[in-house]
Image (cartoon, rainbow over all chains, first blue to last red):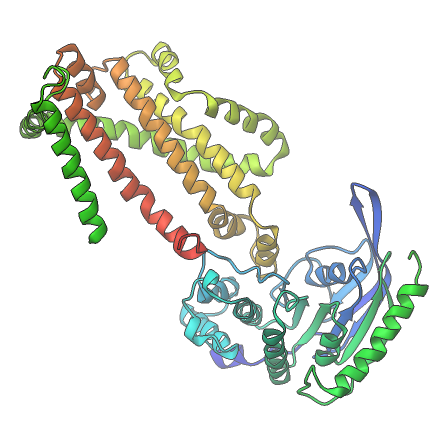
Length: 267
Length: 254
């Protein structure tokens, strides 16, 4: 594997989630997180999962990542059943989950060091490439606590992209950021996705954010988590979260969400 | 530099006050020796070599026991954090024994090992071990679970996760446990050395003890100064680098 091929986007993977049901044991008894959820995500598609808390969207994301196993049903990525976490499917969390004992560069290297087939020099160049891609080349050796919330999520994005995954899983990655920073990151994420066309599954409870980013918005309802409706977003990119078109879509989806909440089971 | 000068001025003033107390003869010179006599004593034992040999004997005991305690305590701490049964058994034992003043191990060590190096080593290990186990356990249990999940998605598992995630993530706790272990070990070793004569080597504790036997206050005070200096040096050499790293990386110091 050469550096040039390494820096090119890996072919993105298709995701097939088939009738997935998941129960959790809690102190208050068994809780059903997901009920026969089926979802197909095409290669290079950007799908946003939207729903109120408790609708199991994060659980579904964890299952695609291989961090949790479905109770029933199956999850496949690139035609292979998901059995364990893998560098093919990288994850970003709401908190950056960066390691404070490493600097920004060290964090990006963490995922690369585990990747076979590269020399140390190539790993270094890959890490620098991705830190540059997210605009943090000047902060390579900054300590994590010195970075702002938005910069932390940028490093987390670089860390997730560095092993060249075929799927990127994002669990409310911008929820804890201020509006200005978030808008910058919407732009960055769209730019990077347009370049690389990695398959992205993005979990959020912010409908506008979902419309701004996703090719498709999938609506969940809670208790137990079920898919209620799907919306294709056909707006051209890059999209601006403040544009009238995004707002129009968002209004429609929010109305649908409210309907499902009111008429949904268990509420 | 300014901080260094302030510290120097402080200690110079302290010695000057001591000298003044001595000159005014508030107490008999047998009880309060002059700074000069203490300095002279230290100079003499430095010249005849007994200062170095005693320091080496004491430090050998301390360092050997400390590292044994550390090497055993770290894995045991990891295990007690992860295995419920061990937490309820070994963890409980460690909690109890850590609360036991480590000097209390001296009589037991003497009965078990006699007046040997083994007894000294045992006392130091007991002083270190329990603090390190408890601190490591606390550290591991406080690791953000998100770190572990993130590490797993990046292809880390098993031993790799332990070494590259759990260990550094719990470092702030482990370092404070190491410091406490060091302090306990140091105290109990001094108690043991003052308490019993071990013929295989005369440590600083023995010199302190003989100072009392001979009514030589300058020796008692002189050795105490040496002990104080070793404590300071240990802190600066052993722990300061760790703590500086922690403060810098974690951003816990202004």
